[in-house]
Image (cartoon, rainbow, N blue to C red; front, side):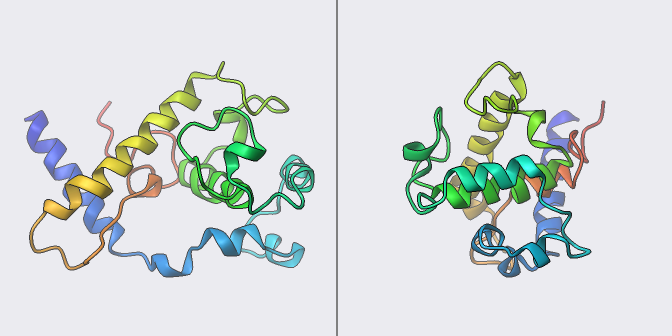
Length: 164
């Protein structure tokens, strides 16, 4: 029964993913947003600590995240400016949480919050699904199907298909 639910869950989130136009969701746009864009109805205003964090890395936005930030484990090679956008619009919005759900404010490198390790492991899981598992599913309508946090979480901490 659990195996059938798992397969059903995977198929549901793949189908759900296909309903979005992912080409319009780029981290580059988020990383270069202007103050007017950050106050648009679709996007909440940027919190002051994110603005301060962006200010603190000015001139280093294109450097690899691991050269700008401490304790980068799963997003090595991602430009530092893009990493902030990924965290803000990928993780925070996808799970409906603030940065402090996983991080210690002011000590972003800290691993004391167990949610940070969970997020790292979930990131590795989605990479494995995207790189290894999805390509083996026959008859998908997409040549390059992908899953991400939103696929299951849909703006909630607990995945939508969680049966607890």
